Length: 305
Ligand SMILES: C[S@@+](CC[C@H](N)C(=O)[O-])C[C@H]1O[C@@H](n2cnc3c(N)ncnc32)[C@H](O)[C@@H]1O
Image: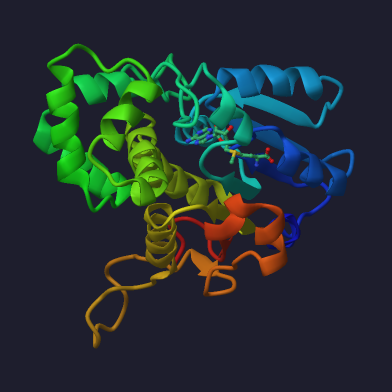
């Protein structure tokens, strides 16, 4: 959905843009191509490998600055630096390089150490810690809440039983345990949901998104745009809710001579409904199947009436 992302950002040639999820830098590159000499992009990624590669590949691009960390933390730096942003892009989730990386351990196709942290400096708990230390009840809740997994309880019980034989160390150990209780025809979808749930928990992805959206909407200048690409309903629900919150104006009871609550409509969703990839795009890139793109435009200064 590159064209929609770029149109959504409505790029000004001398603007300041944030790519909160830099990855391989494809989106940042496309933004840079539309910027003039005074335009700037700040690319952020929590993954140290993505950051090191970005610094190497884009070493001659003076309009690009790379920052390492979770985007909500980096946005707090922007607030301290009083940066006014022309646009923000969040392309959530993981890159295909990360899915294949045995350093992160996200794949159930190959056996890898069960870790899943994008950033080991700021997250202490790995997926293996969760699988080995959580109670059966807490595991089931996690698979239900973050994976929307119907067999959450069965899987949690199987993991508890497996732990009696020693720690679950690898993605292969976890896969085998799940394969022991889930019929073959459901296995791929189940593994995807369980692995997604663990990745979301380990990286606090939903909390990150909530804090990031609050902060980025504040830091946008009037007329600036925030563009968010999500890949599952839990993420999209958060974006929709945060946009709606920022779209709401005065909430005083009707009949008051003037507003007492001070709430101001700060954002406008444009369009109102999320954009979806075309059938052609999904054929070319099956990962785009569940993508939803939401675009918000800042319509008023923070705290103005
Ligand atoms: C789907 S990829 C982005 C791909 C990128 N748009 C491109 O064109 O190559 C998501 C990237 O965002 C990073 N990421 C995910 N959540 C993050 C967060 N909360 N803060 C910073 N980086 C994050 C991941 O490490 C990954 O590299």
